[in-house]
Image (tube, rainbow, N blue to C red; front, side):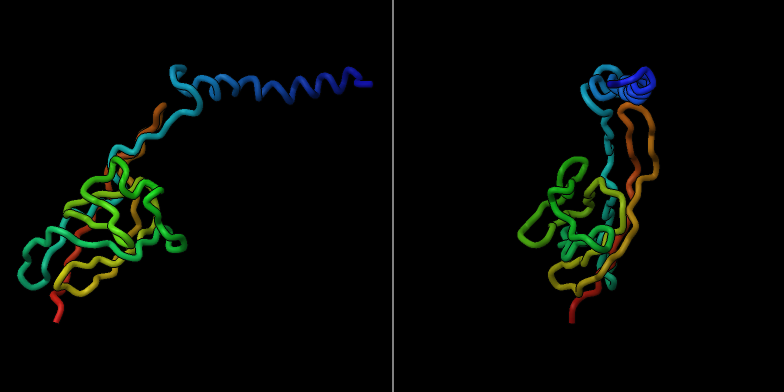
Length: 156
C-alpha cells in the first residue's frame, strides 16, 4: 500500500521531468522538434597558405597524412572532416587532399598531422583548433576558424 507521503514524493520527482518535456518535444525555440541544434558556420581549422621555404612560392595542393585529433584517437571522415562547413578537402585513400586554402572539421581539439607535397619533405603540424566566437541561443553558433600556414622544405 502506498501512503500519502509516497504519493507526494512521486509527484515531486516527476515535476522537473514535466517542465523539461516541452524542450524535448519542441526544442529551445518552440518551432523545431527535439533538442536545440548547434551550427558551425566555419570549419574549426583552416590551412590558409602552403609555401616553398626557399622561393616563397605558393604550393597549391598538399596531402594531410596520419591525422589525429585530441592526440589519442584517429580522426575519421565520418566526424565532419569533409562535410560542410569544410571546403577544398577530399579523402583519397589513406590521406586527405587539401587544395589550399582548405578548411575542415567542426570538432574543437588538438590536431596533429603530417603535411606532404610532391618534391618536398614532410612537415609535422600540431595545433589546438578552436572557434573565435560562440553565439548562444537556439540554434547556437560557432564561427571564426583557427588559421595556420605551412612552409615546406624542398626535398634533396
